[in-house]
Length: 386
Ligand code: P1T
Image (cartoon, rainbow, N blue to C red; front, top):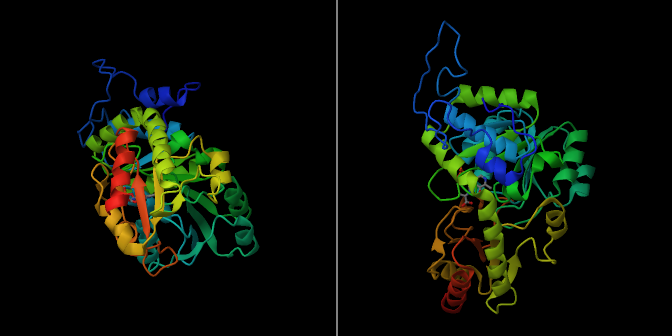
């Protein structure tokens, strides 16, 4: 499933709405039906219309897999029950006794999965600075099977040169995995830059409305896709048809949402830069941001995530995070409503004491789609009173 012919020539916005989603042949319904059937009738033993059992393949999931694969410029798409379930399937490609090189800034749950779940099963890991690819190339661990990177990273918004990492990794026979959750395929397509596997927490921008947990893998290579398709079915961490429908509905508006997320993020950044209570603003569009050049090269725009450090340390950061009214204090990101959080105590608490520990004075914003003036005014009052 998910390998249906893709429409050549359509632009991103058109594919987001139509790819893998033709009107239903029996009724003409323009929305992909939520196919709840767990099993599918066979005309004779082994003779069926492409579906046997819903864990192995489901028509609503096929529509989602076909659509998002196309948006990622990949030939294969695989949907999962969560971002971490998708990641877990990717990590099954690493052989026991071999190593994952992981960027030293990444979602805390990814680090927890690699270190605490796969570590005891024999998969080694090293956290490395992927912004310095030359240093990495000069000191490449021979037992590396996989390089795992986010760009922009969660939560420091570092940007990694995907093309350069892929070049070095591939000379050493390692797979390159890019978590594209923050950028989305609208802003960045890692497969076209040499990545082997793209990972998503579909819970974020793909779903876009804070009402579904999901994961996604996009892959171009047939044999890697086949191995992942095998574990998707064999381990069974698949999403429900209803969840597939929700992500598919979110994806239809991805392009317009991302444009506004970026626009609103810029308004917020304008307030934060130079604000007396703010120390550093981390946003890839800023010319002094260390990842600016890589982001400008490989991204269409700079995204809806903004992080900053607060003068006054951890207490001040926690106070600001608790003082907003439009921004909701909550984990997660990438939806219509703006969120604020303290990564050190919330999303990245599991990285405490590790090379991925985040600064205690850091605040992370997921800038949503409310009016920019209201977002700016809210942050202004929170910085004043927090
Ligand atoms: O939550 P889940 O759908 O399982 O996805 C995990 C995940 C993977 N990759 C990135 C870059 C992520 O940010 C996440 C989840 N992150 C949060 C919940 C958060 O608030 O950062």
